[in-house]
Image (cartoon, rainbow, N blue to C red):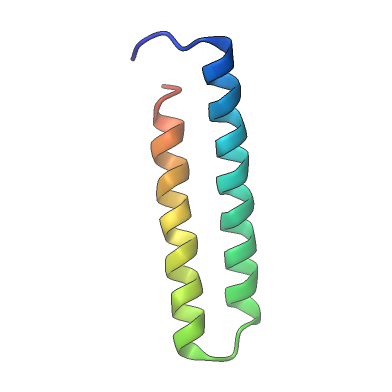
Length: 61
């Protein structure tokens, strides 16, 4: 991994926070949903954001 500047690290941290918020929100909505199709869609969206989070986090390692 190339060395990241402080500005890049701050942007990465901010994006990680956004992704984490989206994961939590979509999981919460899925648990409250009674429509099975909508629940599945919300869980898939949460999983997509989890993938984004993991990919971004990998830049820190």
